[in-house]
Every structure is written in structure tokens, then in C-alpha cells.
Image 1 (cartoon, one colour):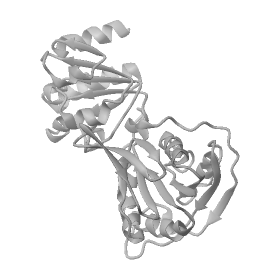
Image 2 (cartoon, one colour):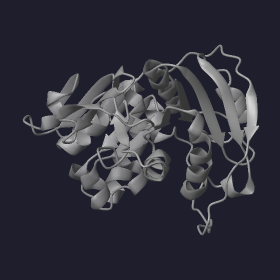
Image 3 (tube, one colour):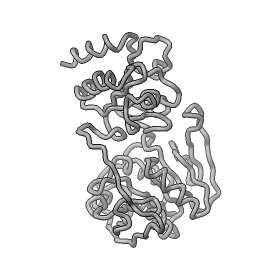
Length: 309
């Protein structure tokens, strides 16, 4: 049996989600290879080669893969899939884009967002915004799986896998036009060790910035938001934490003015330590919080800032 892991990387390093997906792949069993796609990604391939348990790293570099268009990634993976029993990717925004396409091309049913590997053909995944767990057994000869990386420990370093070049495929009729990148000195939300999130209770975009951002700066944290805050225009879409946003599991998650709708809890309840600040003692967020402060954030947050020095 052999498993192909599609790496999540930035061109020079592989992200922690890749290490965690390798852990899931090793649990499926057999040999584990890692595919790195993207022009100028040799450094990322070399980094992937150091992950313990990886047999070899496949590096697909071409002009068509420079912007990792889903169509080009799909064609590249489908061309390699004949040698593998399973194709696995982190459940990132990119993974959620190209993995269903790969499954369709291979004529199999994709299995999304797994949080546990029971056996080589049986997996556990959350449903109903994380309120229930579903055990799925597949009879497909090839398995196409996305992994909720927050549910797995990262694979250790210490490997020395060889790096092999493979052919990248073109994107067909699709073509890259442009992209707008958000630049920030803060940690990336999906990989941050500390996250400070704000909710609709903050009342305005100006208040959100004035309260959440200084606290995040003080803690060296990424900034997150509930869907209600994003829908109200208080924060940009890429700040959204939850079932329809980003799933995070930092060491510390601070929720300010977030009531705790089930969709939001699904995206952060695996955080190691959860601190909730809300003036409603019956807010659902307190059901998952390790530390809860019942009070007005306008009083609590300044006191917290003062205590942090």
C-alpha cells in the first residue's frame, strides 16, 4: 500500500499542516510519499524530505504550477495516482478546492475533514457542525481524503528522503489572472499559537480594531473573528473562524464578545486553552471555555492589558 500526501507549503518551507497530514497518512499504512507542487519550490521539497516516515518527495515544478491552480494540481495528481492507494491533503482552502476535482477525475467518493484513522479504509469525520461524529468505511480502490490537521500530532523531523522531479501538468482552459495578498506582521491565523477573536458584540469595525488588535499585539497573536462579526463588516473574511471559515487549534484562544454559535465552536473548540469574555453568563462559549470572565469587554480587556504589562 502507498499513500501520496499533497504538501501545504509557501515555496520555501512546508507548513505544520503537512507534518500533521503525514501523521494521518502513516496511520493509514504503507509507504508515504509527499508531493510538492509549485514553481521554485525546491526548498519546500527539501524541507518535506526531512519529515520522519516519508519514503520520498516528488517535486512538480512548471510554469503552469506557479500559482497552484486547482486544474493544474488536479491534472498533476491524477497523472501520478496510478501508483497510490490513497491521496491525502490537509483540509485547507486549497485542499478543499482541488481534492473534490481529483476524486471526480478518479471516479471515487471523497472523504473530507477526517479527524481519526480507524483502519486503512475506515475514518471518523465530524458532521452537523461538529455536534456528531460519523464513521465512514469506503470500498473505493483509491481513497481521496482531506485531513483536519488540528486533530493530529505533527510528524517529527529527522527523515532523509530522496527528492525526485516529476512532470507538472497544465491547467487546460483555466489561466491565472491576478491575486491580492494580505500582508501582516502577525502570525498566520491557521498556524498561530495564540489567537484573539472578536464577535458582533464589539459593535463596529473601529471598535473591533481598537479592542482586538492591541490585545493581539500584546500577546503576539493572530486575529480572528466570528462569522457574525465578519458579516457585519467588522473584520475581513480571512479572519473568520468556524465551520465556514478557518479551523484553528492554538495553544491559547481568547474570545471577546463571542456568544459561541455551534458553527464557531466547530472551528476552535480543539484549542488547548480557551478564554472567554462575555457579559452573558449563559453564552454557549462558556461551555467549552477553560477560563470564563463574565463582564463587559470594555472593562475586562483594559484590565487584562494592564495586567499583561
